[in-house]
Length: 112
Image 1 (tube, helix red, strand yellow):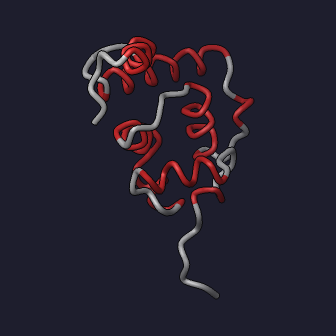
Image 2 (image 1 turned 180 degrees about the vertical axis):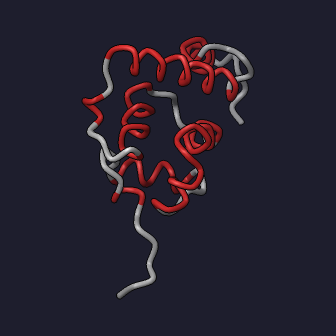
């Protein structure tokens, strides 16, 4: 038996690219991701410079519940969208994620 932590990609719906993104955000194991929960983990991901992506967020939420990402529908999806938008706004200083992305592209928001 090994004491190695389970990789992030061992969580349903999360693959190697997501694992690498979480590693850049300082999240190096499935255990840590579970302990943080989806909102705090995603907040850290955004704070590390990752671009917001709603499908990635709800795939994370579903994965931490052991569910396929395609389970997210209807009112549950709408509720997750509201959480996602609030989370993105909290990281971007209150600006909606779409506005933040546009401002970054045209160079209005300093890269940091």
